[in-house]
Image (cartoon, rainbow, N blue to C red; front, side, top):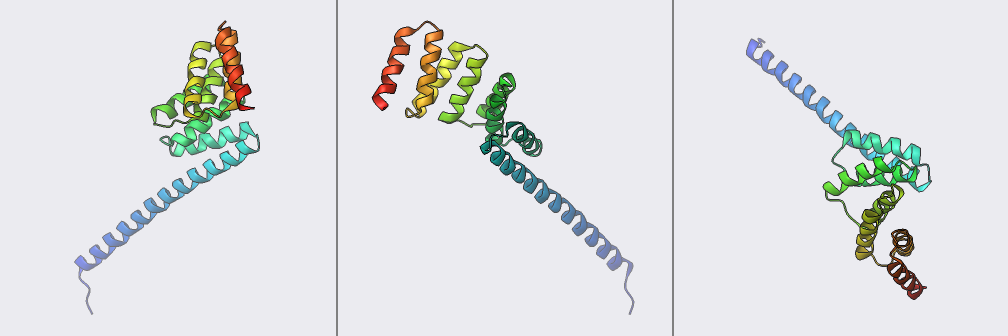
Length: 167
């Protein structure tokens, strides 16, 4: 039985094609799995309060999937928890540009602004958080402190009244 050169070449090309496809697919699945694993590990570390380790895992997740707005937002929170507020604000801004937004996110962003003494911006950010979720007791309290630092004592009193209504 004689096999032609064309069949051998076609078979070799097919083997190479499938080998390359398998290698690319395996790498893509591996990266997706690694990114998701890093994100999961970062969330667990955050819940345990191990913020430095969480930051490393968020960095791994974002290296592989820089468009992940949830990882970016959580990176901002982790950075703020270790007093790296300038970096936190950059992470928060990236997440916001990616479309990520909720009350807790705005609250933590406001706290970082306050820590950098950007009190007007901090007040505005925490007001936005409270518009999204008025039940955030800590946000009411912190907003009262910011208003007091800004010399807006009447607004600070109103925040205290709001807190007393809730309790």
